[in-house]
Length: 522
Image (cartoon, rainbow, N blue to C red):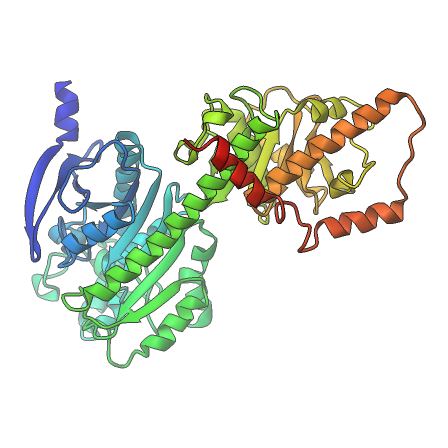
């Protein structure tokens, strides 16, 4: 217990900023190094166990705790949209940046996120970088494994290399020292306003497209693509806010042209009034933060509500199986999904989680989302008639108008037992890719998955598939000759089903939501 108290070192603290006090919890977040972070909620109170969204503020060179003049209003702005402000000290804080690196900064950020996940059940993190903190954000995204980081906001992303053009002598010395294997040795005191190694100095000011050089205006299109082009596929969104009066941006830089080049590689941008650290102009920046995070939160809230409706409707139409099976919606680089261990009539929007207690859920859903970038929702069920059809040698056969939804759109993956082996995932993905336009994965002797561009589409398809399977089983049970529909009619119906008017969920979902609100919302 004493060790835990020493490690977390969580105390109430009030620190003074240019705008007044900020109150929160201070805690040691790094497992091996005494690095701390301040976590503030509502700009004045400590976090609670219900805080699951965090905005992590990363300052520039020499910054530590409370780096910006907008700390307090940022804490309040984040709270308005359901986020807590987190302000960590990294190993490069203060004057230690001179012998640090972006790689070390990213390691510290990862430890911070692990701490937030463990201690506060964090489900979402947005990184907010200022100046060199912007480089830290981009370096983090470059790694690809962004985890619960859903986006980054870059404030004041300027080029160090372009900022100071009067350091040719020291750049040359740095390169010479690096060439002699002395990159980790310090430059003469006259070289810089803080102690700095040749390697870090060259990374900041010397090498074009070097370690710290992300935001230079003189990049070619190819260089821009190499430095920032990978961000569009990293699984997190990126928004850059540039100040018109940024004193660290050379007057020769065409800011609007620079931002257009960032737009071309998938970065949203805004050009606002204000200086580098927004000692003036912070209101416009805070409005951008508020609106961006509110829109993303609204998107998540809609997905959570639709998933709650889908679970309840499975219960309503007897398509659930105690606490088993799962429904998910793609969100960021992951997915929102069934929590497990709950009856489906009791699952509400807040119960939906980012990773299920059921290991098979993550394996199956991960495989489908990886194979099909156009799929945004998956419903996996073990409904009686669909399972029965999966036990037939001939599998599913479309007999009716409802069945035409799935005509020539069914992929198959043979049963391998409980899907708890990660190595099964690629085989599921291969099965899905064999039928490029499939909207269902039949899993013989097991169950099925339906896929859709939305929760409503995936769920309504699941409903119609179970009904079509029920009709097939009932027809087979008569023992009489089957009247098979004409192929031309089946193809026509299949096409009509996915027209704008009849696409699954288009007509049905609003009525299902009303039923949910009448019977299941307490």
